[in-house]
Length: 191
Image 1 (tube, rainbow, N blue to C red):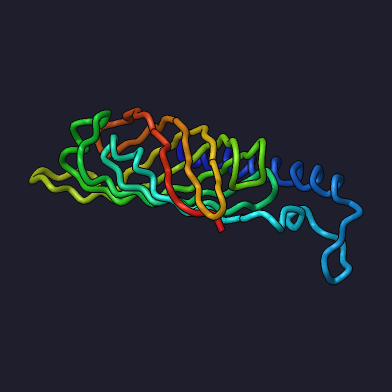
Image 2: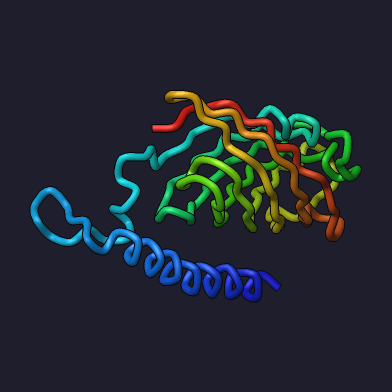
């Protein structure tokens, strides 16, 4: 299952990257960089901020403390990295979440449709792993994993960003797959 998800994400990124590069290079074919060389698709949005860093208090409803970073790879594609700590059982959590503390890194793709990545309207899939620290006496597995998707909008004002969105995730923390909603209410900065 994990290899299928990884294969789908790799295929989508390999297909979408050349398509984004082709449309960007055709719209800026007459532009050039400061040294006289033609601008590449990745340079076509060089004036826009390419990095986003935020804290997502919307995940607190699921018992998660989440920090996210997104890097704009091209005009319409961003790569998102997140780190969540499952600290308590959330409103939509399974009973197993009450007996573990988890450290869960996440990686995902974001496809931006209105503004240059990492700003504006986006949609994206993600996968995550988890290292579980049982805080109960009975033994449990030490690793978990999951996948999901979300849609949202990054509102930027100067160097600040507010992220609003919603999504869902399926994860396995030791008792089979459990679905939970993800609320995106992020506060942070773009740079």
